[in-house]
Image 1 (cartoon, rainbow, N blue to C red):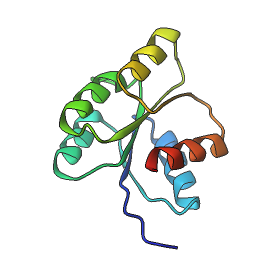
Image 2 (tube, rainbow, N blue to C red):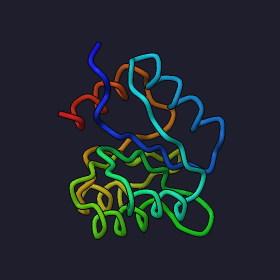
Image 3 (cartoon, rainbow, N blue to C red):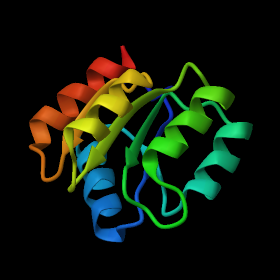
Image 4 (cartoon, one colour):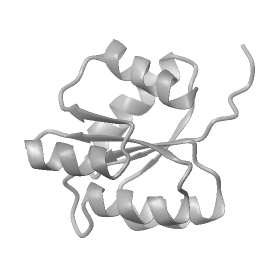
Length: 122
């Protein structure tokens, strides 16, 4: 297998969700960095290229849609997958209108998630 050149970041305040997604990506040969808060992630993305960000909507202090807006400013080429357990049509529309590659409701299927990740990285 060729070395991974893409940088994938997972931003979610739920530690078990971060670990699950990271393990799922790892099982598929992809490496991801995890962040439990938006500020640490945004600091990272200002210094390092990120191919794909997986953002939770509901986090303390800054929600995922705000992170997406800031990410669009500092790293417009980064693809975004937005995920949430409490989604509404308005949140889905806002995320997609702001350029999200995909919007997922938790829980989501492993294969469907991995398919989206691979599509986003193409």
